[in-house]
Image (cartoon, rainbow, N blue to C red; front, side):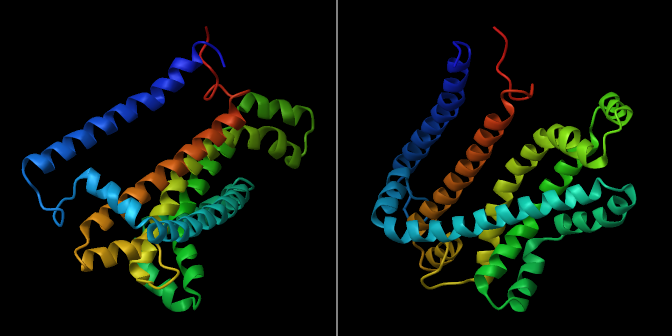
Length: 266
């Protein structure tokens, strides 16, 4: 790590953390100053107490929701990459099938989730499919764009060297598409979590395998607003963690050779 990198990384963490502390302090101060009841808007301290008191219940629910989101993200990543590789083989294939990928993106998940839940008997598989539908489009769109955005000079050089289509794909198109792929992966990680939560809302699944969305529904019906806020906090924290993990993965893969993740010059 160079001397220029350390302050930059520290500031990336310190600046948002400082804003968060100021916002939480303002929230706490306003709730206390105006004596707002906790069943309307709980203070951050009350939310923290709820996280501690209900830690077992919320941790189990978080595990269920994260399991659905991560499984959906993995499936969307593999399926989206394969579809993008298919699209790049022929413009006709892309022109014929890409509108259907757009259809998945523009159709609200709340409209098709009930159908998926009815058609698929296993509730967990149905929830994963709903999350996959939400998360797959950024992978397809970004990876396809990356595979198409090759340097024409390099492409002509490969053709002059009589490289096969397989060699062009492995040695030129895929390496050049990685920054686009990781951009799509960062977006898809959040969408997978959103899809999992929305699907849980629609399904309304309770019991031992209930996720955070069900806990939010239950807390709202019981007017247990502190638990509702605690569940919302865990969803937000999980989303930030997923985004951070994909950012780290992107940096680990691209930092040594691609300028988008390269360290600034001295």
